[in-house]
Length: 398
Ligand SMILES: [Zn+2]
Image 1 (cartoon, protein in one colour):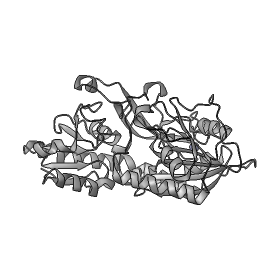
Image 2: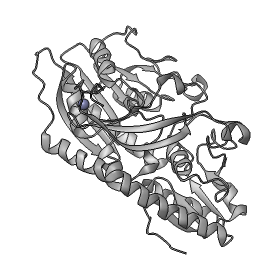
Image 3: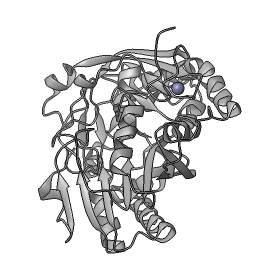
Image 4: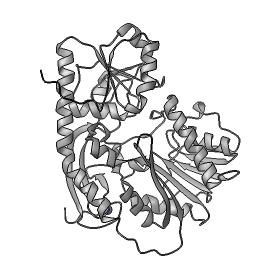
């Protein structure tokens, strides 16, 4: 491990492994047409390493060539009222706090374009969105908003925007230092802002959330490592905060011309992450065995169980547990996912209306933030199932 360079802070010899999962699907949001192909989905390994220099966590076994992002990549959460409310409040916050009105907004990894369209509509802004998984038919582009169905790379030449945003994308990028250096080349006006949003690894580690570790996410940030990355690539950090029940970590930064000597992140904060990484494998193992025995007990008792949520968390949950027959279906409110199959374990994705006839005994909610929304939907489908969130993991021994 002595010669490994941290892809985030470029320290040498500070990275050590702490968690491993073998043979997981290389993509978790790609739509798969049939069960056979789902079961035969290509796999890769996860070997999480921690950099004790900056607190960055990354998959050292990750290979960029093995993940695919295309128009068959279905990641949007835009069918959830809870998620839309969050996005709306965030767009308004950025517009009001940073005076993003009548300005140019560039979004890297804009997905289906919902957030870019929203911030342009609410603030009267012009927009440019980059994403290979953008689908033109799904977004009626507002005036002044254009989409480029490509990756943003170091070769992309774009006008310097007033606001550059990048939500839930950086965690899919391996060499984060190189990527931010490219971003800095485009975001080159000192009066401009750069906003990033990523999952917060602090919460994942604290909760022993093994379902939040998957192949598509090769980079995992805490406030310390995120700050370190920005300071090290020519930015001054304005603010770092969390939202969405502490699931998201957000940063607002500005390009700086000062050659700042980069202080290594607060050692206390790095120490906290080092401690959590040290206990993660054991916490995840405990949570895994509790869920495994619970799901097997349900199946043995002839009970029907479904997962609610068919995205990356569901794929990571089922593949890490090695669950196939104990659960037949995963429910999703995104109609573009319905009728497809989960990569790795092959469950069919169904719409909430399916539950009216299926009447599951147990519903396991992959993301607890949607609990209220899902309870309302289950009531609409006249289901009286027992409801569990993924965090309800008290062991039920047979
Ligand atoms: Zn580092």
